[in-house]
Length: 342
Image 1 (spheres, rainbow, N blue to C red):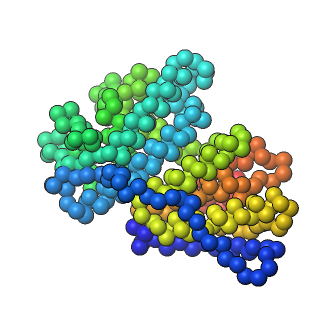
Image 2 (cartoon, rainbow, N blue to C red):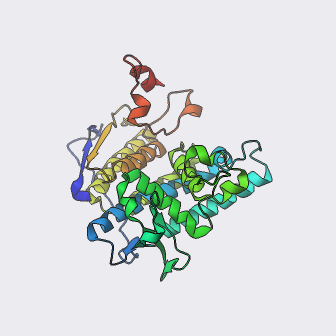
Image 3 (cartoon, rainbow, N blue to C red):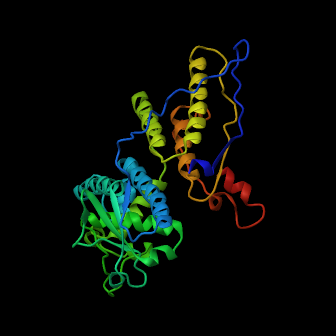
């Protein structure tokens, strides 16, 4: 994966007030990978090697989504209330509190399943049109691994749909199902999930997938104190290390973060810092090589390390926001600048 990656930092960071030319040596911020850790995925013999590679990549993405959702779940009861049909309750309502606890437990279980999964080729009789993967009650585990059967239809959809499928099917190891609506149709879309009642949503696998997607996209909470900020930095660095491969990217990010940290030390000592330096970056590479995941982690790290600071008097509105092309480019000429400013 690292071979497909090309990282370009469009910022040159000058070390001010230091006589002569010095280089800041990269140190082992991210630590060493655990060589004894079991592989995330194993495969049955009927899954071809090229498809094994794709499944590994998609499993990494699915696990990253669930882990991101788990990290944010405590700060977003509004998402829990929306998708589990509790909008008419207050956040302190016992049912809302209980559902939040249940969701957090379920996300932990799903994350564990995606990190110890065994893929097998699905039987044709269990793979009607529209079925991408399933869990069999007759073969739920392969040793200590959670078994997921992959249907041929899985390979007919785009990558994002495959990742969503893996999140969906992971929840089915923990008492979720494909809930049917009153008309007999599956609640397998956003519109249909929002027509379920609270008890139906509680057991619907698609609802959990939508919750994971919504939480992962949600804005990160601001830091309440210095200890939470430092804990956040440690967590994000560990998250970077958990990515498969990308050694050159990790080294580049390591150097950048060391320079940022060095600038903050200088600032605390009353010396010239890196304030005002551009930290714009471009992440280039083939689809599925981790560009978005790394960019998201780096953005949150720069915020946590206070390399990016709000304008004076505007701290209450300062937050990490992820934006795609659709969020920035307007439909009509002349409106793009307004969207970017917003």
